Image 1: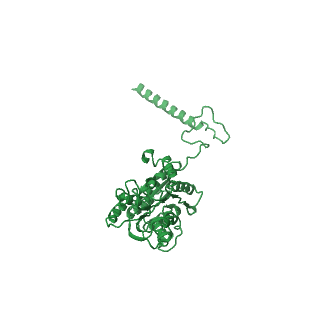
Image 2: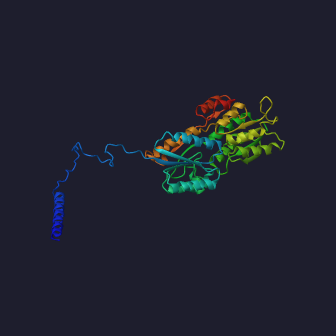
Image 3: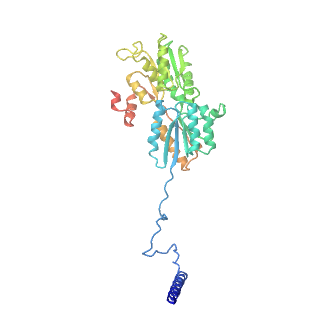
Length: 376
């Protein structure tokens, strides 16, 4: 029994000495010298892998940009969307999202509200109806999101109902002049549309700035100069091919020959032309036409119709140029190089006709919009 007590006492003393030794070691250990900016780490020092070196470049910030297109079924809007995507690829700092309002004001307005919810860094807006979208553009501005309105410009008057045609306060714009675009065909039509002609007019969406201004240009540059011309029919086809085709099919059935198709864009002109393509009263067996047709946009589709002899002329609205300018200005605004209100730029509207159409067709082949097979 005594032996057990001695063994227990010895074991306790041994543990006591061990603890004392450990505490003594911790208290007397010298701390590692603090590193100074000029000191060189010891050869066996282990680097802190969690800390980035001071000399590493900071990662470039990625900006979220949304392009809200008017409608995917509109050939120009579809072309513009494609060009936006191509041009955005040249900017590593921009991540572009493209959505479409599908020619519906409620849909487009909902998408603009969604841009606020998702916190985009910049929004590019192609309005369907300027007045309908203007309050939602204002919501974006109020949320501190830079906005570029394009094809068409949103004006201050679209928001407050005034006649103010200045760019809407707090926004920028990249656009084309719709009056000059339509004037290209209107001036030409003065000379070539026959006396006492019967014409039809295809209009874009009511309230759309480009649609309204192009129509005004035809009044100024053609109808005012040619009071002998009779407007047989006029209606809204809302930029759409199928709506224009349906209207033209109905108008032709009246039996009165239509001498000219006056369209506010190429897509509607194409629909109207399709309605009479196989009608020998309009297109003879040898391809000769007995009508004139005028458009705007200079799309690949329009150029092919000019090459066929079915579309008289169009004015180029280069989606490639508009998209390039939008992306360039977007990058500059996001980097703080310019203010959003400094963005105010416009593209030209050259005429495309039978004499120069081949150079524009070649342009579309080179950018991938057309192939050689499309020319067959």
